[in-house]
Image (cartoon, rainbow, N blue to C red; front, top):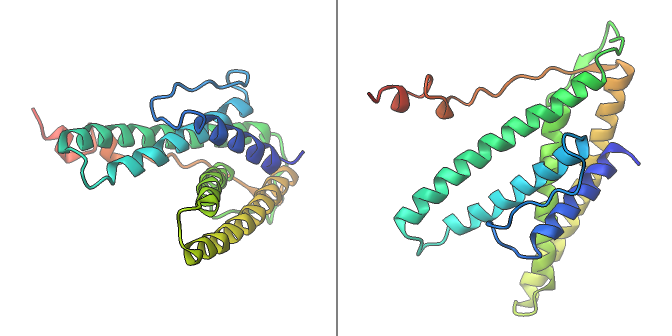
Length: 201
């Protein structure tokens, strides 16, 4: 099994298990060994899935302002958790390949493996929800046709992105490419860097 196949299998498992209840309050039941890469991949997608539904809820035009504010704080925390987890997954790849002899002409990729995996996780959600649109029976023929076309594009994108991830990992393992982890340093979450936060006494 390639690494992208492992990702896709775990992401789909997470998406399906979330939608058993389809509630943002459902506690996670991660079936994998704690601190294993499988554990982190499942956690990654669960965070993405809950946030996807947070984003749906906050767009309700009838949401109460006080509820929207509470939800905004949850989305902020979710975004930080997501970023921290991406960096943790990249650290896994750094450690895994720490002894690789990097070729003199090796190049760096535009994004790290974990940020590409992040996109694959989001893609699983897009595919799931587009499939639900295709299955709807209360829509027009045109809506069904458009959603079917979009689903086919998403499936093609999943295939291409999966292949690109596996190629990138192979190139890193062989020394053709190298990677670095740049901490995202999200300034708005840091009390020492956000003027609104450090300006308050």
